[in-house]
Length: 636
Image (cartoon, rainbow, N blue to C red; front, side, top):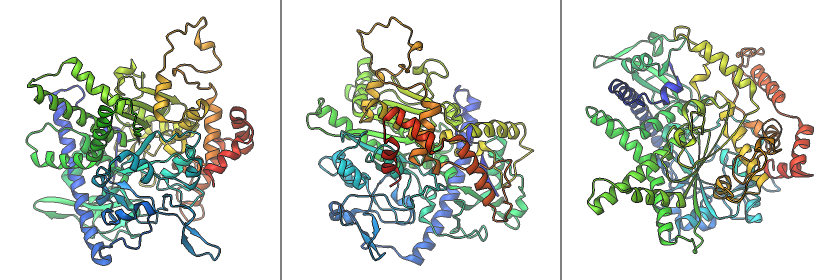
């Protein structure tokens, strides 16, 4: 059977009120989720052993690297299994381009690293190699970041001034099903193009199960074959005891399948040590979310020492590199408060559930520093000044930018910029939204956090969400069919939560309209308060929105500029497809995809402007040839 999760019940903690019964229920949920991760880990290990026997361990000698990284070849991780790359920085290899004879050759015009197609092998640099460099953030910015030839020629684009080392933290939830027109364009490369070729370094936080691009194309034969992936839909197959499944269902975390029949799951149930075992498959993105939850949770159940140890291991794997980067950034501030040495400022970017890992790492770092101070002064508590000193160092050293965050609590200290859509159901239900539930400081986004909100153009997603959630919530007895999973079971069910088809374009508009060239400058401008300005008119009468400090946000950014920018940058090619009740899922022509794709395309065309309207909106705000300039950057 396929495991489909109620995402709100899965991610949301049940111990917010601190009651003993709720704490026990939360610990039980963590215990059951740990069983799933351990079963998947076992299945993945068996699969990896089989692949290593077939392929052998590659030495990576045939890898084409940028010249400045060639001396580090012996330290690189070239494993075909993503678990080995966890906590490492992705290496962007030289682009392979067709020459005049149609033969693939290495690009010789520039030694700049570029993003690879999804079919290329993953190569990464371990974090200890990075931090052994004399100036780690300079090396990170100049040698490990994705940079196109265009960004090098520009030496900093319209929205980048080389003052920051920008690290994109990814945990494995990706747009695997995009249909962007450039065959070798991945998520990070697309985001870089939208932000005028801004260089990004990529930190891999996910585990082995969250990168199907590294596996073989194979079909599921039976439950006993652990080394089989169903790569078409990104599933991992495992064996799970029935007690775990029933326990998650009773808590509302696991949704019942309409075709559920344990007797059919593996042909017949097997019994191992008195426990019923069934064959299950789980989406790799869902598994990544579960691992993130376990890595960010503090289980207070002392009776589950093995479970706590496993969660602690996950936590260390996810947070270790982030903790090291924060250490380096804070030490730079202590050593050179005025930054006379021009060290790059550290910026961490995250989308969706990945924000939880960053928040947990910051909390861990802050707690560790507090304990160090307590031991040094032989005191059981810290003074207000000592607390403030730690937060001031974090504020000066670190900027965190989140897109559609799925995290309710961020520690005070860093400069936070939270970008999300008003109609994003996941950030509304599970994230820090800013003032929605009262004062901004009480919303958990961090003290002095900056929030940017807009309305996405995806009205049909909102209608489907409301209709289908109401239909699937009243009773789990009326379970959905396998071909139409409920929207509550996937973070990709609403495009207001989509990074490359919504939020990254909104950020681009804000920075481009205001001439902002760094994320820290964006934060400072949004927090700016002119003490000598006294308004003699209510700001609601202004033609522009002035609720973000020194920034200008046009009032028509939601209904005109944002849809136009999505169309111009090619964000419509990254839209998540959601099955419609008006579309025949099986397809009228028997291929199972054609009619559904056609219906989705019609809906996209109806919610985004055409080329003429797009040109009109963009040229009105950015001048003549604005559309051509964006095309040249994003669609080359």
